[in-house]
Amino acid sequence: MKINAITGGLLEENCYLLTDDETGLSAVIDPGFTSARLDEAIRALPAEKVTLCLLTHGHFDHIDGVPHVKELTGCEVYISRPDAPCAGDPEISQGSMLPSIRHESFVPDHIFDDGDVIELGSLKIKVLFTPGHTVGSCCFLVNDVIFSGDTLFAGSMGRTDLATGSSRDMQESLQKLADLEGDYYVYPGHGPSTTLERERRYNPFLNEEEFY
Image 1 (spheres, rainbow, N blue to C red):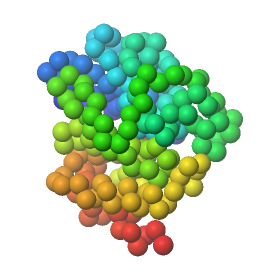
Image 2 (cartoon, rainbow, N blue to C red):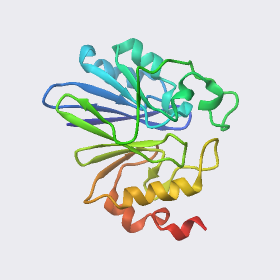
Image 3 (cartoon, helix red, strand yellow):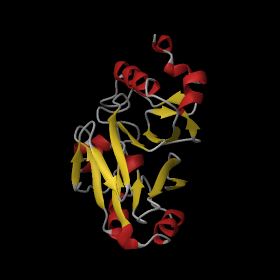
C-alpha cells in the first residue's frame, strides 16, 4: 500500500491518501481543509478509484474538506456513530476551539462502530474506537499502520478539554494502543509520523501517572 501525507489548514492538520497497490483503490483520511496541493494529489489518482473518505473524528479541522473531496471524487464518507452529529452541526464540530469557524455540513454515507472492518480493495481497515479527544474518536489499523487521528501524537496526545473530551477515556484509549501486539507505523492527525514502539518507550502520556 502507499500513503501520501498532505498537511494544511488553520491547524496544520495531516490528511492522508491511502492506496491499495493491488487494485489502485484509494481512501482519503481526514480531509480537514481544501488546498491546491491536496487537490493536485487527489487528481493524480484515478477519480473513479478514490472510493472512501474516512474520518477519525468530527472536529472541523478534520472534516472541513469533506464536501469538496466528495464533489471531486464521488467517494463515500464514513464517520463513527458517536461523532456523526458533527457532520451536520458546525457548532459541535468546532468543539469550542474557534467559535467563528463553521464548516459546510454534509451527510455521511456510512456510520461505523468499534471493531468494524472497512475494505479498500485488498486492504482491510479495522476501526478501533479510542475516545478521549472526542467521544467518537477512533484509529484506523491497516497492516502495520495506525492512522491515529488526534488520539496519539509523536511524544504527546490529543487535547481532552474540548466538548465530549475525557481524560479518563483518553488514558484508557492510549493504554489500548500501547497493548497492541507488535510495532506499527503511526500517522497522527498533527505533527510528524512515529512508531508505536517509540511511543511506548518515550511518550510520557502512555504512562498513566502522567494523568494525575
